[in-house]
Image (tube, rainbow, N blue to C red; front, side, top):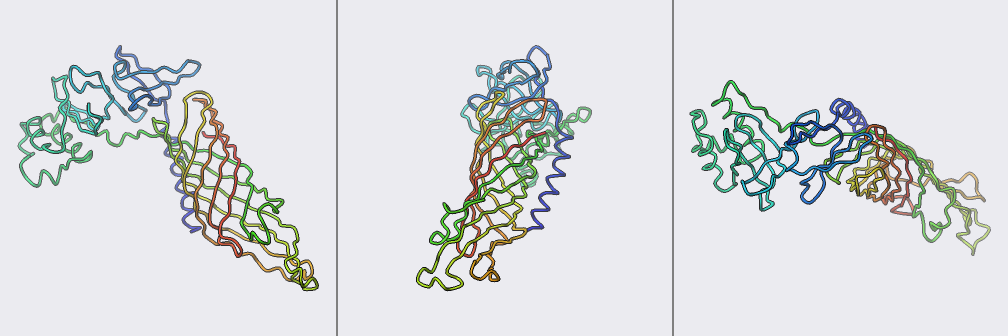
Length: 380
């Protein structure tokens, strides 16, 4: 398990390098031909608007009627098209760009669909799942290398993003060899941000409710710190993975456990809990709002590896007898929390968060613990 967690740390480092190379300003191409640069978020019902953030300017909203396309330094992410002449434009995801282009998105019934943009035509041709071969054969004539009526065609060009993109790219290469098309399926629509965080935690270990109730714990404040990898999307939802080194501790004052035998060396007992963990939380985040202060909520799962454990029971009448409190080498659980992101588009962003974590410790006298964490972090 420790090997897997350390491998995750190395993977996050490589993803950081990828994120730094891929990061760049987003852009919007307006219907007047202007190219505006900044940072984008998709907003509104069915995410049919984009909001552009630029330094020292108020955010600007654009609908599909206002722009031609938007994207990042990797290429176009959405294009504005009319599904029929009487309908307002909608945002579609381009998959192949060329003389014949392929797009995907919601149709007028808000169902996922594929669309062809044919040369010299302002209208789109929807490719339905039921009779897609017939529609494709009519829309893409004149290439003898593509036989629509064979099982080989269905095997090579299945009704999927990958299959239809390969078909359009091959068709353009066949019919228009001097104007090859471009495969846009590798254009990444997410942004990766690396961050660091540190903070305090309060351990509430269910060691033994009869002997050591949670309320009797003292000195139960620990520390944690580590790295974060945040995957931001164009919507309010995002994902985050973290790799944290966590110091957990708690102390329980001496209590009498055998009042009928006060002279026994084990009639009075105390406990100290000290162990460290390497934790890997995997989270889904929902961010409310797009202003300078953005509240967010997290929820997810967490796995952890215990690195060292010096937890023990102590018997004041027998100082040499200190049996250890076993903590499982591998633990798992769930976590929820919330916080605030202080958003600045062009600078490191400060994050303040409180999180509640519940997992199994498989300790000698208890099965679960709860930890409350308070963190401050920066995203770069």
